[in-house]
View: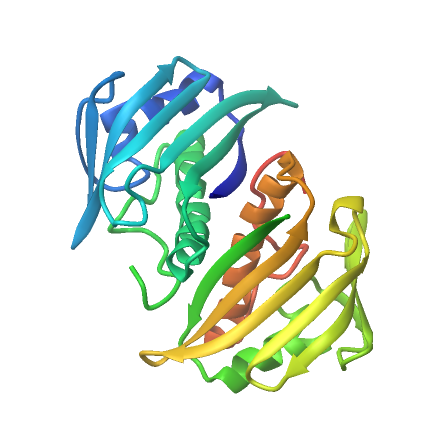
Length: 146
Length: 146
C-alpha cells in the first residue's frame, strides 16, 4: 500500500479552510466547478472533470478538524482508496495535512496524481486567502495527461 | 522506505529537458539560483536556499535519458536518499518521471517536501518551454515552512 502525502499552510482560520473542504460550494471553488451531491457524513459527492470524475463517500466530517472520503467511483486505481484532510494550527497558519491512502501499486498514474494533487491543493489555499481558486477546467496542465 | 513520485510532461525535446537537469546553468534556472559545483558523474553539486541547502553527489548522468543523485549533505532526513529523473517520450511530450527515493519514515517534513517538489518541478517545464523558470528565491511559498 502506498500513500500520497502533502502539506499546505493557509493564512486563514481552520473554519474557513474547513468550509472549502466540506461544502459543495467550497469544493466547487477549488477542485472542479462540476461538483454536486451531499457533503454530510454518509452522503456521496460527485466530482466531474470533462471525460471522467470521482464519486466520494463521506466517512468523516469534523468541523475545523478533519474530512475523510472513500472513493466509491472513478478510475480503477482509485476505487477503495481514501482521501483525508487533517487541519491543525501553527504560527498563524492553518496547516492541511493531506493523504490519498491505499494505492495498491506505485503505478505511473500515481506519479501523475501526486503531482496533480499538489497543484490542486494550492487552489483551496488561494480560494480561502483571496476569494478565488483555480478549479477545473481552470486547473494547471502538467503534461499530456488530464 | 518511502518514495516521493512525480510525473511532468514538457513540450520540448529530451535533450533540452536533460540540459535543465544535468548542467549547473540549467539547474540554477529552475531549482535555486545559488547552484555551484560539478554536474559530471562523480562530481558534487551544491544547492543553497537561504538558510540551508543540499549537496548532491552525481551517480548517473545519461544524456537525454537519466540523472541520479545521492544526497551527501542537507537535512538529516535527506542524507543517503536518492533523487532520480528518468526521461521518456509520449505524444510530442518529454515525460519526466521523478523519484526522491529512500525516506526512512513518512514524517511531516516529507509531506512538505513532496508538495514543494511538485511546485519546483513545474519550474524546469516552464524554463524549457518559455526560457524562464522560477528558481529560489522566486519559488512558490506553500506554507509557514521554507
